[in-house]
Every structure is written in structure tokens, then in C-alpha cells.
Length: 398
Image (tube, rainbow, N blue to C red; front, side, top):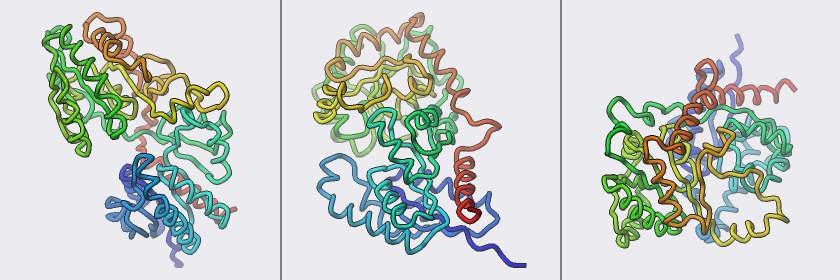
């Protein structure tokens, strides 16, 4: 009996979050295919444990921030071309790119041009619903199937002329035990105790822009609610920057470091003041009403000023829970509006047990399970793996 040839998957990730998604997908793929599996490409430690020998260290391309990218641009461009050459030489059954579009999409476009027979699957959609919607139509030329983490993204890509897109679930909806409070963890609203989370972001630029208004907001909240306990979950690489900025704060929050400590704080919290980003979805799934703020850098502020002439955004909210729910229940403050008094007043309203604003958010967040969970208990990695497998098989049946 002739054994089937191995299934060859070439993966390109650009940062640690993509490495984790890729490793989970490979494990699910092994469970679904009866063929041996060959995994090649660029990844980190998690993918290496799944048998990947990375073409080069992930740290070579995992850089954040415009200045950091510009400083290493020649080396990153070199890695793009090295990766493209390796994909073509390996000629895999399917190329899987995961997130980090500034790197992975540059690889995919060049592979499509030089080797159009290789199917390409993209895992995690760029935020075309927020910035530069024209990217969706361009993606359709080099992405055969897009695996989306947010349930509204397939419709967005359909409307914008993007590639075929399937919602495969979000990692957070599979971590409810980490995010949802157990009995006794969150003090009842009938008690005087209140825990307020302060989340200025995980990137240096976010922290630098938001610490000043967040500090003024915390001081004002403390005046209105003297028994409030403020907790600031922080990522380790921003701890020094945050502690330095806290020296000017009138009220000193408790700083907790690391994901387990962050989620423990979420399970105790009654309200939050947060930077825009994935953390807003974490808070919503945890059932924590919030106020979201963000301050754009100078470049995007200029774009905002001329948005009447350049189609840079397609939605009227940048807050993920609002986008998932299809309505704006979480208040958001942008640039000059994200000032201490305005933020504080909205957070204070969320600390009152009978607050209409609080109850509106809590009731809306209760709908997230229904919207975001996959049917029949299917896992995110399992659904993604099945689509990848189907796409790879189409190459040989075409």
C-alpha cells in the first residue's frame, strides 16, 4: 500500500502572538490529516517545539514602532527576500502567513508573483475596518483564504472586495476561566469596595501619551470615591517607563506584572480606564465596564484632519467590543477629548450600582458568548486547521 506524501506547510510569523497561533494550528492540523506533516518557515519557540527549524531568528523581524522599524529596515527587507526565495525553493502545499502584515504580506505578494500555484492562507486580518480599507481589495490578489479572529470581519471583507474570509473564533473566548470571576472574587456592587483598573497600554508610545491624562483622571475618581482601589496591570517591558511616570501622580495605583496577575485583577474589577486595543475585548469578556481612550501620533492626527479626502477608516468606533456587538456601548475618547476630567466623570458613572451607563455595558457584554463562540464547541485552532487543509488540497485537485 503506497503511503501518501507528507503535507508540506510553510509558515511565516512576525511576532510572538503569531507564533502561538501557528503552534496551536499545527497541533490541530496533525489531528486532522492522515498524512505526515512537514513544517517549515519562520517562527519562534512554540513553533520550534512543533518541529519548525526557523529560517532565521524571529527576533530579526519582531520589531515594534516606526523608529525601530526604520532603524532596521535594510535588514528586514533582506529577510523578506530571503523568505520568498526559501518558499519558492521548498514549494510547499500551502503558505500560511500569520498577522504582522508589514512583513508577512510583503512575503506573500512576492510569492504569488513568482509562484502563483502555491495557495496562500492569511491568519488574522489587518484592521481594514479601521484604517486604509483599500488594503482588502489588494489582498484578494494574493490571499486565497483569510482566517478572521473577529466575527464581523467576513462581512467587512465581502463589502470591500477582499479575499474569501471565514471567522474561526478568537483566542479569548476560549479563556473564559481566566477572565470570568469565580464566586467571591468580585465584590458585589452593594458593597462600598470598588476596584478600578488603569490600563495605559503595552507600547511605549501609548504609555507616553496616556499616563498624564490617566493620572489626572485617577486623582479625580479618588476624590469622588475615596474607597476605590486602583490597580494597574502592566507588561514587564513597560514597567520602568510606567513607574517613572507614576512619580507625578497624586494617587499611586497597585502595579501588577504578567498575564496571570492581570487576569486576576480583571476578575476583581468593577470598572476600567483603558487604552484602545485587545485589552478592551478582554475587559468586555470579563464583564468589566470601561472607558476607552487613545491619542494618535502626529502622523495619524494629520490623516484624521484630512479624512474627508482620504478614505482611511470605515467604522465610527475603534473599540473592539463596540465593533463585535454592532453598537457603541463603550464610550471612547480621542486625542484632546481624552483629558483627565472627561475620563474621570465617565468612570465615576460606572461605579454606581444603579448607573444606566454601567448596566448598558454589562447587559451588552453578556451577548459576547453568543456572538463569538463557534458552533458545536468547535475550537479556533481546529476550524483554522480544517480550512488550511482544504485550501492545500485544492492545489492538487485543481
